[in-house]
Image (cartoon, one colour):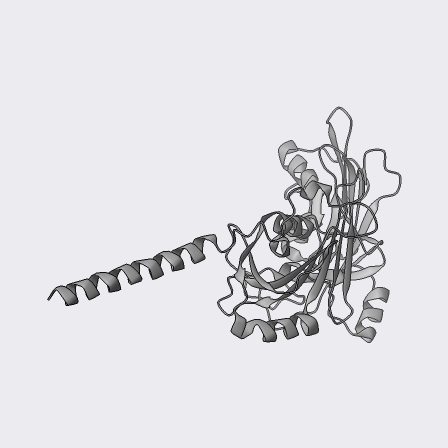
Length: 339
C-alpha cells in the first residue's frame, strides 16, 4: 500500500516537472537575448537608412530613406509605399525568437534557406549592414518563420523560428521584391491646404468638363464646360468635391496587358483628362483615364448592359499604363449634381 502511494507521488511529481518545463519552454523560449545568433530585433528603427531585399530569382527591392521626404526611394527611381515600409520597420522592431528549429527539421530548413531564402540587409548608415536576415518559409502551423541572422561578427550556424510580438502569422510575405507592388500609388497627393486648382476635361460626350480653384482666402471658384464661371448654389457640396482631389490613388501598376494591348492603350484617346495643381506649382499632375472592356457582362441599376467595366479603368500616368478603381474615380468625373 505504502509502495503504491510512494509510486503515485513520484509519478505526480514527474508530471508536474514535465508540465513546468513545457510551460517554461512555451513562454520563455524567445528569451534568448544573451545569444547573439537570436538578436534579430532592431531597437531603433528611426536609425535605419536603407533596406535591401533580394530573392533567389534575382528580384531586388532597394529602399533608401531620403532626408526631408515623406517617402522612401525605391531602386533609386520610384517612391515606395509608406504602409509597406512601415510594416517592415515594425517587423524589425518587434521580431522575437520563438525557439530553435527542432533537430529533426534542421537539415531540411537549412537546405530550404540556402535554396529559396530571401536576404534582407539592414543599414543604419555606412556601407555595411548592421544586421542581415535570411528569411525562409513559414512553420507548419503558420505561427512562425524560419530565419538565420548574420551580423558584423559573422553568420549564425543554426536557424531559428521567429515571430512578431502581437501578431499571429508568418513574416516572409512582408519582404517582397516585385517593384510594381512596392511602388507608391499616389496620383494626387496634396496634404493640408496645398491643393490649389483642379481641372476635369471630359472627352466622353456623356460627361461635362469642369474646373475648380481655391484662393488664398479660402474662396472657391467653379467653371463649367464652356469655361464660364458658375454661380454656385451648393457651396458646401463643391468644397467637398474639391477636397476629393487632395488624396487620390491608383490601384496597381500591374496592368495585365500583353505588348500589343499595351501599345493600343498608349495610343488610345482618353475618356477623361484630370489635372491638379498645388499652390505655387506651375506644371500640373496629370492622369488620363480610358474605358476598360468588361471581363464579363455587367448591368447597371436600371438593368441595362454596361458597355464598360464597372469596377476598373485603364489610365495613363507619367508615361505608364496603370489600373484604377472606378469606386475612386467615378465621383471625380462628375461635378455636383444639379449645378
